Length: 375
Image (cartoon, rainbow, N blue to C red):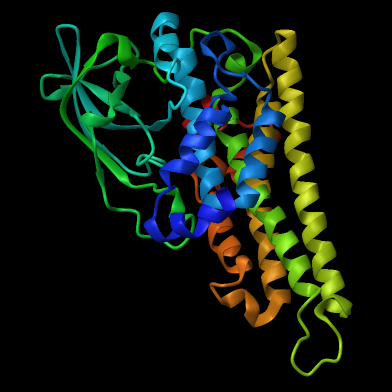
């Protein structure tokens, strides 16, 4: 179904509802949600591998799934248990979200009045709810926490409380539907307001998954999209190489030495990057499961591994597209979309190349230079 709908998603610039609904009904969006609310509470490796499989079928669909997994995983652990269970009772539940403070929330009796506009709301066309972060206002100025920073809250807004703005005009991951959403003076009751990023990640659940460093968690699932797309590119190239006879050659593409070298390099790059992610993520998982606090070095290695996996996935796809010749330039060739889609993943702040510099600092014994890492 995902493969058959991929062209439609690309054309419409959002995922067809039937695909999103099928993923919801199958429980894919819930794999990181607490068991107490009907989730699977899967370990990181299972999450990454699940996202990989979907992303290999279509990168944009994998991205939508990844974002939904993160939103439902964190929100299911942040809401009061009785509120979360009521919300998760819907088998077709899908939640879009943006944890950046671009909304304004004003306290009123029973809740907050919320106004704001959030970009990159992936999957918003399929979602029944939007979870957006806001700055709490005190009159015309932001309210302040005891430490002096702005008070932040996340508001869960129903579909009739926000509008989708047609802003996602892009080349890569076009089918992800990552448009802006806007809410204006929407009332959100207290039970649908969270404070997960106020003074560190505040979650009610205490299982290993919910004690895992939150920004590491926001990094590792991006990897599944990148490595899934790269794996699809390897498979597409293999098929092309068995059919294509380059102009001026009596050999098939797969019989040329340059093809052998390119294919082996792409495979080695992808497998090495992926192994680095699993090594570092599982080391932190084991530490958290024991009740230990992961060291700064261990957490930083996760971010380094995740960022490198995304950039290396793109490099592997580039190598294959070069070896494929002009075929990879045609939209009818699957490699063309793989190349466009995989580049977008590493543009996300959680896995961007900037983490390499931060990793070097921390691994040399210096403090981290990013608020994401320090929190």
